[in-house]
Length: 336
Ligand code: LMR
Image 1 (cartoon, rainbow, N blue to C red):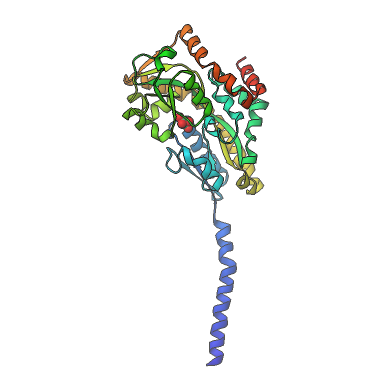
Image 2: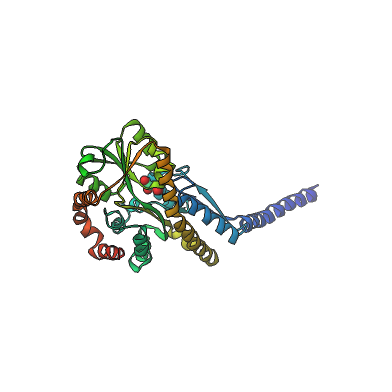
């Protein structure tokens, strides 16, 4: 009996020991690397399409080894939380608009200076050049590394008023802005009241009159239905909304070298895809807004545009020291 018990005990011990050795090994060998990619816009926007392309390319490159889960429309994390979530390791990729890196570096604020870039082609030239590329690694000491820039487009101004042609028309109005001090100064220069607010809250704030207006690209205005709760959209093209796709430095460096190389390659391809779509999506969405006939679309005369430029001009001086004259000049040169 004693021998039988000893035999049984040793059999159980062996089973546990073998299990302990093999199970985690099996689990490790089979578990794919899961990449959560969180963003705040709709899937049909340039960023939404870029994230889906990245998923497609990565999963094709690493079948069963890497899985990309895309969470659009602030489903997982909204503006306020996504950068924190990335640093905590709760998501692996995000692509905030360049205005939202304000807390991490003052340099990227160059993109927020009003009327700095003539068009998205100029923005592209600056981003592809040495200064734009250097900005991708300007936040590594804060735990963030940029893998590329994705375009959305030029910003337009909208309000719940009929008249929106001259800076005086926005005097005293409340505007939703992204979390950027430059944008705050821009609206203060117009004598209006800026309010920092997460993207997901804008529609309701416009609808209920918490704010009177906002600034955004055609694709964001259309996909969020802002044109249904605004009276006038003026084609000001006074600034840009573009993105930096960022990941967590520690997580990135911990990846096997072949995966990192493959993800970099997929990012380059997804970037080309998304950037090629951006202008077309914005042009198409402008037309859809015009066709819907809810908000009136206005364009500016040369004189009107000069008046907006002049009114926003003080913003440049205010932020020049933080951003650096060299960056501002480099960006200006990209206009050619
Ligand atoms: C906004 O908050 O208005 C935009 O930056 C949203 C986005 O990601 O395009």
